[in-house]
Image 1 (cartoon, rainbow, N blue to C red):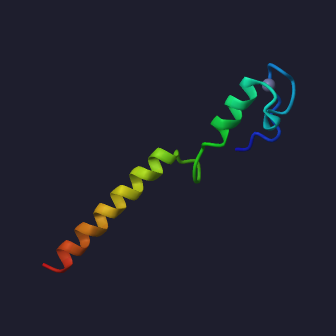
Image 2 (tube, protein in one colour):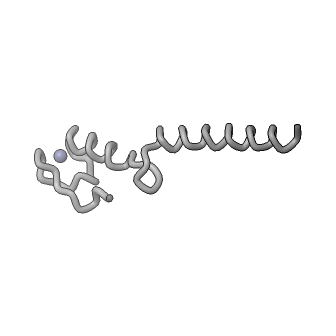
Length: 63
Ligand SMILES: [Zn+2]
């Protein structure tokens, strides 16, 4: 989802221009959607899980 075509309800300018605090808040929120719709926090959590899974797999393989 992109905010390029959204018009601000407060200042009636494109949100992407960030002309008022509401625009800037919405722009920040829309641009923090992370990868493939996943939140950055969820991506970080998945990376940690993947790291532990890899370590566990190596531990099992080399015992
Ligand atoms: Zn605005």
